[in-house]
Amino acid sequence: MGRMLSAKCKQCRREGQKLFLKAERCNSPKCAMVKRNFPPGAHGAKGYPRLSGYGQQLREKQKVKRVYRILETPLANYFLKASKSKANTEEALLQLLEMRLDNVFYRMGFAKSRDLSRQIISHNHIFVNNKKVNIPSYQLRVGDIISLGADAGKKKLFSNLKEQIKNKESLSWLHLDPDKLEIKVTGKPTLAENKAEFDLKLVIEFYSK
Image 1 (spheres, rainbow, N blue to C red):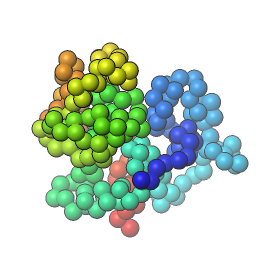
Image 2 (cartoon, rainbow, N blue to C red):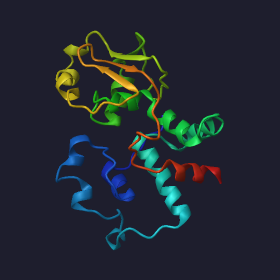
Image 3 (cartoon, rainbow, N blue to C red):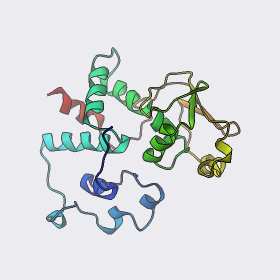
Image 4 (cartoon, helix red, strand yellow):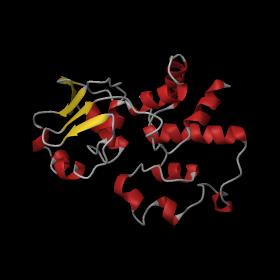
């Protein structure tokens, strides 16, 4: 399985903004975007270059890959699927990305980063509709219920989970039961409420060429 091997802080510096890839560190003074707010590399201190139209599209596409922790082929396949949808292409692409199991698990505060979310899922800790699922890219549907294994409470990883999710911002298309530690998919994400770190229109323009 392909992986992103470049340093996470360098990925943020390359894009010129915080992508929140390292959980709490991104909100601390140790964040690379605080200490070295310029591109990585020998000539990075010169600052961020002025981008052409194509350059802006490329950078937005790279942001999507880095934020959702996916590689080129899966993202291109998501675009193809979204472009064939009867719905708005931008919204269809957003839904394919946001309704990944690893993303939903992260969004609701069950993991402090998407990388940790992927690890938890691949280690067989997660159930969808009472069936074990270990595929981070698993596409959720409306009505699906995500839960932890029966022995999750005994694991150090989840020992402070209820406190961790207590102040998590809710999403209109997801319902969290903090007592049962369950997430129910009640709808689909929309462009209106999306607070993405990137512009999906530019990503669509990149792949439409």
